[in-house]
Length: 318
Ligand SMILES: CSC[C@H]1O[C@H](OP(=O)(O)O)[C@H](O)[C@@H]1O
Ligand SMILES: Nc1ncnc2[nH]cnc12
Image 1 (cartoon, helix red, strand yellow):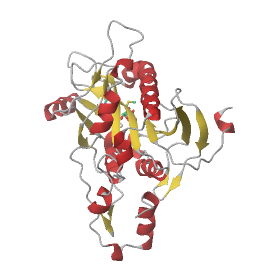
Image 2: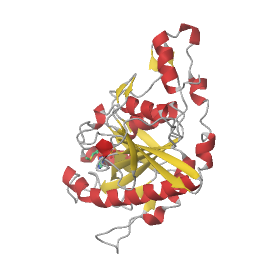
Image 3: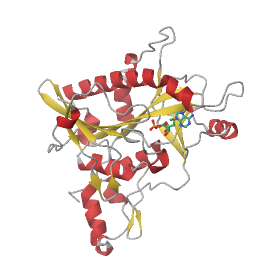
């Protein structure tokens, strides 16, 4: 059956949401059972249809939803991705966690192109022009904690499968997965890449890798109480190495095929293991359950009916 012949509705809650980035417009390791058309949310339409797949693991059924961040034909630049719609749709489908993939530049010698990184910290260098919150309205003010922007439990889970990575063209130079509590991703505005001076400044800040899309995705996931981990796939050394050409899109594209294969292998293992037994952090909410409600400072009595409808779109139980 081709994707266009599949049902366009799916009525069960999903377990895991996966967001694909540059070069990862679908996951070949998944067998779709439904393709939902781009979902209308109070924050607009999602950037792509949502592909639903079901995996059987022993006695369990495990459901995955896939969204393409930039659209299936890469129509949305990082500044204009409908991040709030994408994340609202994922929440509406009742995902228990979000696994996000991103192509990144490396700010450190030891992180080579084709290596993967599980960042645990981030530095926001976007320019305030992206809608980055559900709780930043007159009549709805909320301040969620963001000290630890990623899910350590999820990163620990993913790191178990570090050995699935392969370098197909140069097996003697294996692809590594880097993971420690200080590993930091810088998120810049784009769409232009950084200047050499900016790239060196980000290194001085303590950045290890750089992309254009972890903000506001990670912030919105936190507001939605969703455990969120980004798997960063290195494609270049950005612009800080004076003796080398600064990053170009051609350099990035040169590594996308290998990174895409590794993303599929990694996602397949993660899904297989989750289907056998849903990890504890997905069952319990990773300590995030109830944090959004606690963060809202505005009194409910003064909220407009439309505001309450939007909150209920995200949190039907509130
Ligand atoms: C084409 S290189 C720059 C582009 O790649 C990354 O996209 P994504 O995070 O969606 O994989 C980066 O964030 C930029 O948007
Ligand atoms: N050098 C870079 N800067 C920002 N985003 C990127 N995505 C891939 N490489 C990048």
